[in-house]
Length: 51
Image (cartoon, rainbow, N blue to C red; front, top):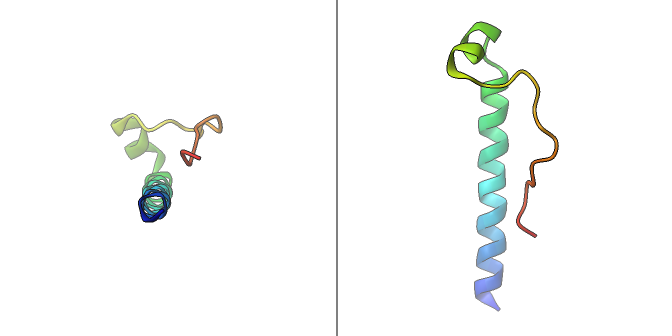
């Protein structure tokens, strides 16, 4: 039972880190985003949590 809770907690932590990174990258100027290959639009078909 605790393994399940730990996996869920880890999944939420990973999703939170992904959202924070995405926000930071989207906050960069367009020229820098283009240089690093970050797409202009976010793909909504990405699965955010594994459950």
